Length: 427
Ligand SMILES: [Mn+2]
Image 1 (cartoon, rainbow, N blue to C red):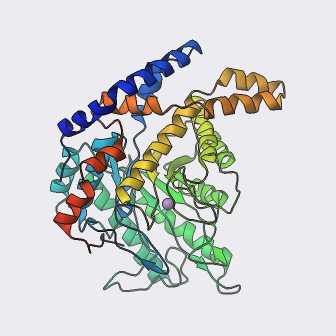
Image 2 (cartoon, helix red, strand yellow):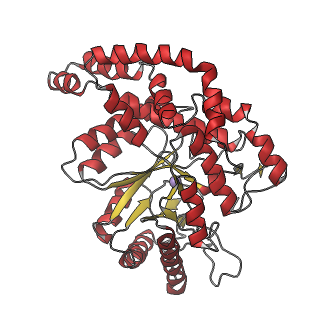
């Protein structure tokens, strides 16, 4: 199932006149402020966000899961779904695989299929938070942190295999997220658990190809509810430093306690050149994995403010960031949800790009608190959606991605092809 560019172009015609008027007005407004609109459009276009293979089906909660219908049943179908999103948005030129859920039987064919959609392979993700059929040792009491050397060896070996799968696909990084921790005081020797984790990560790191990176993700709680071995950015930073220069911290927006100042974490890590990647989602209470920008769009903008500042003031040589959506909802059409997330991410980025940095810096130096806020909010409250539309249509995407998706009855076609009771592999 593919969308032809002609279909998109035809539907774009319906609202092109209205778009043209809005874009020209905005172009004029921004131009008068001295903003280079063409450069802005290029930067927005270059922000390509990876789609995780597990977000293409309906997610569940611990109380149940409701299938959406037409979900992808194998890796080929997942790549085709990302292809649909990318055709419409021109913003999702990468996919992030989860091993073992997405082990490709024929990596060459899979790579070709992805390339035919204009998609590359972003970070590969290991999984030592579940036991797999036929697995020798259990991860019930941890993986890289485990008290048993045999369990740790098995988990290390799995991560090495994930690197090999990634190499076959042209991926250049591995993300390690661990569920390791304890749910009751006394259950675990927290210091030994961290030491074991560091030793295990160093062994995985030693296996990294020269041009690869390792991203270490953190999370304060869940599935363990008393202690998590890599609980926060500081622990991730400590481990990344212990491993070496190819190891970086990964910030998942949902992996913080309520009201944590995530933008400050971003500022700190970029200052030290240790921010490797980003997992976008939104939340109100915990790791809710809701659509980006659906709950706290201003926070997303403030985070991008620090990201843009970090990219423009990069003395510590922080690498280009790996952008990925990591959301899993259980109500919406997964493809519509991802389209909404992509739009929210690019919008927050665009808003951060038009902040008057010189004025903000001056205002900060003068400790002019009100003016500093005005400068930020002037950017945040500028409607930049015409820019995003312009970026898309210049490269053949849809003026209105969700509208086009619905008018072309994509979900109905997927259900007709795959059935209404499919469950995406891995979910
Ligand atoms: Mn994540």
